Length: 492
Figure 1 (cartoon, rainbow, N blue to C red):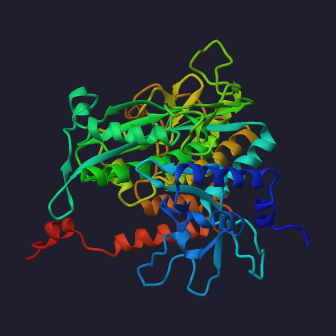
Figure 2: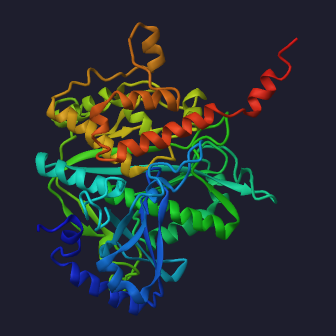
């Protein structure tokens, strides 16, 4: 019998040495407990905890958890479990030794990212990679893309979020600071909070580079160095965990909801992307002692150097090279379907309807043009803008790969860049496709785009479509305060 995927993963060359290295680090750091985590279809962090005494056993055999955990183990509006019923088998999660990281706020605990597999006893594809694992899917899709095209997708994200005051009832009581964009005084008011975030982030391998106060109450954006698309998604997930912990310490709410307030800017999560040939791994100590790291060295490695294929190859310093233009062509072609992943909730579309705050609503591209869905933000990189703070970065990376792949393989022409304000261009007669303006419309666009569905392989598209369709139906099935205020006295 050939080895299953799970057997190949566990028996991979060098893994036994990594498992032993983790044991040595556990003993040296005094780690007593382990979080084994994976990411659900909506970006939630799921998993189990085990005593560190059982590390070697769990590294080989993994842990089991119901398949429905990949869909948050939630029920739909009819009371049925989303994605998988109670009769479904249990997945197997295998920890990745290289991702071991001591929690800086609780040194007795370490976390691991895990790869998910079908159960070993399944009648069909036993021990195969689980396609409900969005993180595992991204790794495999990116490996296939690199093997076929010799190009690595590097990503940097801009995770806006809001720090909200917590009322006596535990509910939000407004933003901690005033909605003044780039004001150092408002940034300073949140200094104890963001400095604690940065302290934890650097301990956990995030090479922090800049930050600022944005233009909503309590809204901050803190950035770290870009990297391989999977490593960046892991760091965004880690950043969210850090913010949640800091919020507990300061009795605040770390809000990643895109649009908690109307009349001020929403929280976006722009994705800056580029395609590279070559490069090498470089260690970034980010304030840690290289001889006494609180995690495995891989957490501190960043891919640097190589050839950036998005760089201009003409006399126009703003115009991307041929590979870049084809990538733009693919993304612009599929922007409507991509929006179903980048703007993934009912609330996401409040961002698009609250005009005047630079949220993209048109499927076009340009130079430094914030009215389009994609802009060339600097030579050598593009900013994908139709994405907000609630995004699952693993799904987003996978579907962007699908769009870019289509652009390259079919030599798609993005057309001329739009340098005008898109609204002025439309008034002048330009025919521009609008992005979906509701979750329902976005899901319909995704249902009609097989290329982007290709970035959600196996069961992933079914699960995402089922989960998000139920979300849309529950919204349409509800009565809001607006309904009552608007219609309670409508007649006679």
